Length: 217
Image (cartoon, rainbow, N blue to C red; front, side, top):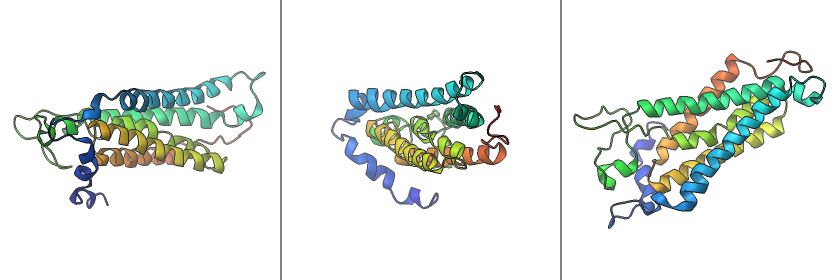
């Protein structure tokens, strides 16, 4: 699928409705609802969720006041928080290192930068675009950390979080695509990378404590 997708022209087809050929721009680039609510608002919601897990972890150290369930999932709380931070940070680093430009910067959409296939080298005179994979979508996809953090102890919560993470990542990525900030492939790559990072973390560092009734960092 990774190698088939680029030949489907789906990126151009999906983003076409949001590009005005007469104005040579993306009219929704500065749309208040998409930019403020879907872009910043959803991002802050995910940040709050991650901080809730950190707060529950810290609350677990208050032995006399913290409930048993807080101590039981103490390690899962910090695992989820750290995994969310690592996955989003990794995407930010990859994005900063990438040569690919955002759609709104490409010549085909009124910009000045060339379009690059996945493994193309940067042409002479072109500037690195720092726009791949999709950074904003990584916040939504990072919610899948809850799935790995609780899949062995709370399967219902885990499955719900998995679907929520997938939907959030795709919705946040779609909003960016509507603005001309990313192609859909950017967001799909983000989801795949985040999933693989979370899986690796899960296999290397278990989110479950050996003694679930004892506080374990």
